[in-house]
Length: 130
Image (cartoon, rainbow, N blue to C red; front, side, top):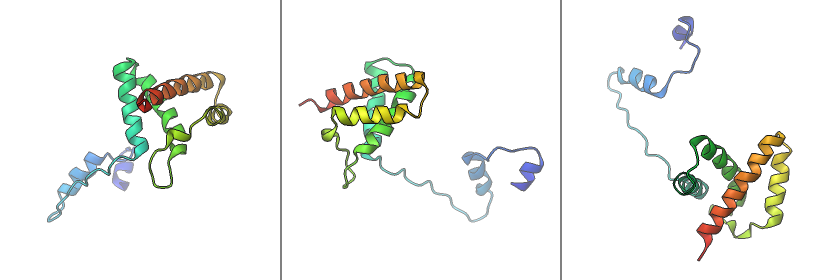
């Protein structure tokens, strides 16, 4: 790394670069680790992203922003056993979340937050229907 910095490289080396470099070390076998299973929040966010893309036809940038809001909101509803429990979500909780998060954002970003929350709540309503 010192030599790379001396040559003018300031970015962190990529994973592929490190793996290539480690491949030159004799008698070193590299095994890729299996990815960890998705958490309930991550699973919900993946489903939500698919819904936004397929059903709503939203652009990638919009989906990315909506997903960030969904992750922020849904992580508050993880039960002690690790499951996602949105059965307790009510108007008071949603308003509290929006007010709290809006204080940290500009007026325009707060409007996007509200739109993203409406979209997420619509999705949860559709998914939770019997």
